Length: 278
Image (cartoon, rainbow, N blue to C red; front, side, top):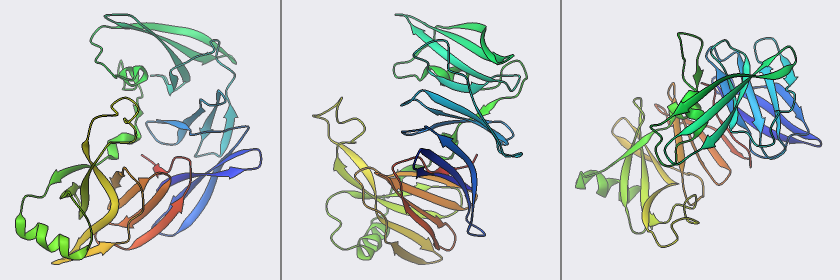
């Protein structure tokens, strides 16, 4: 199952999509919401916290019972994000960085308001670590959280010259670069790695050139055949796989297809997040 967001006159609509049946189900309407949402799922996936940092608004969504509750504003102006704590209650985190450690203050929603629950001091902090991710796993045997990035795939360079030649034949005018196998555990998808700067890092590394994987062309193996896929435009392709489905997206363009058959199920353009329900 996938989720995506649609723009409403006064906010955003959250919809679930079932690719096996082609059905769409509205889960929640977020009035006043703007920008890209951050979603934190409860372990059983029947609840989620949806946070819009652009406007500082957050909702708890009981997906199983269709109950949508807007959370009260946090006590501080700047927070790291929302999550379910080890008792299953909505919480948010404040991070305070120091040279050798980071202090994480967790506030829990109790009796209609936010109360400080605990303070963590983390000393083994690596550069670029997202603070909230350090406490987004189960503690003390309680209920934990799950992050959508567990479905991200990775690529391995194709070193077989014969396979590379066959892939070249499927997609004329591909330009410089090399082919890479997208490792999904179910089916085989090949993408083209081309020279260029990752646009997500161009601001910080303007002089660095690296190999970026593109969503065009995409080639799917079907038995002994290599079948080219239309793919989608975009400078940097992000790919995810779950339960035999493959989702590729770049610059707001999304493509979903079935790995085994290569059947194109859904193509969509949206400035907001689209992804698999964990």
